[in-house]
Amino acid sequence: MGLLPFVAAGAMAQESPNIILIMTDDMGWGDVGFNGNTEIKTPCLDQLASEGMVFDRFYAGCSVSSPTRACALTGRNPFRSGVFHANTGILRPEEVTLPELLQQRGYYTGHFGKWHLGTLTHTEYDANRAKPGNTALYNLPREHGYIESFVTESKVPTYDPMKRPAKCDGRFWDHLAAGEEGVAYGTSYWKHNGEKETENLEGDDSRVIMDRVLPFIKQSKEAVRPFFSVVWFHTPHLPCVASPEYAKMYANYPLKERNYYGCISAMDEQVGRLVTFLKQEGLYENTILCFCSDNGPELRTPGTAGQLRGKKRDLYEGGIRVPGFVVWDGKIKSGRTDHIASVSDYLPTFVELLSLQKPPYEIDGESLVSFFKYKEARKKPLVFAVQKSGAVIEQQYKLFYEKGRYELYDIQKDPCEKEDLSAQYPEIMKRLRSVLDTQLESYRNTYEGGEYGTASRKRVQMDWIDVKKVD
Image (cartoon, rainbow, N blue to C red; front, side, top):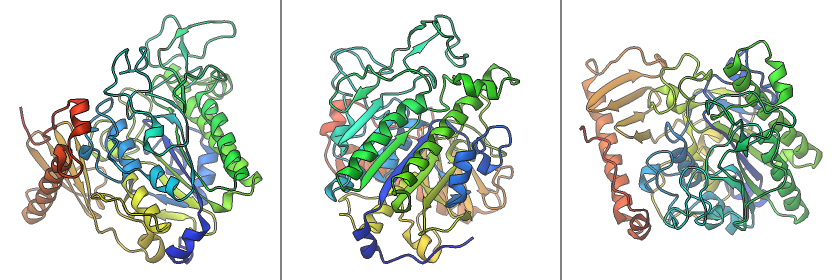
């Protein structure tokens, strides 16, 4: 393992590398081959990971979807903008996003796949929250720095995303047979201009998404502009449905496994298709690819966090530690690291790397440039909050809080969080409790108007969620 010498950030800014942020949905830390899974076939991801830096300790922004997505685009804890949980709040318009900063630098910016940071229509029922007359949650990607987009508000089936069988459990089913009509699923894809997409929406959902990503990249190349592409796959969020060829690959497995494993392998193929396209177009060497999941695996699915404790919605490691890597050919050597990184680090890393204008607000993430250049240790702890739980993570120790109860773990020696050390290290407990309390107060100050007022908060009409309030 090792890192190639980095050029100074100012010189790199002249190169304007292309940037692709790939995120899967509800994929566990152990759901990929490069983290040791031997059942789910992910050869394209494994190969790509081998060409870059794999973070053994890469963290989502939260243990559920929407908050992580807000965190990834802003570099800030989602509690600041009121994205407290999945299907809660919106990415507030005052927040400064990475695509906004990159667009100011001449980047062609696009968002493809899941959005989950507001609704995409206010004239009809769609997905989880959209309905006629509901303008409070109407929040399109174009309002946050994107020039192009092809998105859904929330989840869709991972095969034939616009429909489902007339009878199903809503979680797993085998693909519709040829000629079988099915019924509308109830979630639409929306184009950048606010119109509903009606073409090329059948088959594997990851392929449907990638069919929009590649032309976007081609257009950017033809316009001689660097591109920033966010690719947020729905896979393997429920409902999991595998395409025929990948269902056949796992034909000897039960219904849940063959569809869960199959939809991941189908998505993996699309990542390989993307990489092949970049190389054919002569873009791979000047493209930074980042990969991660939005949170741990869903309950009662074949998804796995490996040996880690907990799953989705938990602030134990299994809910927030996710597969993650960064690839930049010729700039970052391949290898693995236990350096802590998070989706909150995307924005500050690219701000420093490209000498972008710094946002005027507090940034909770930390640039990874010093780590890549000098292997410097992380300075900022990671802080998490969801419902009645909170957590603080440093390189060695982790504080876990839930409903008035505190626990402490040596997360380097005990990543599975088996031994609570809170009684043995009262000073560490005191220090990390102070970090949690101080940060929660800072988030609340932002939410209640301390940085940019209350106009959008009043629009959404949500009260602050007090993590520490025990009912």
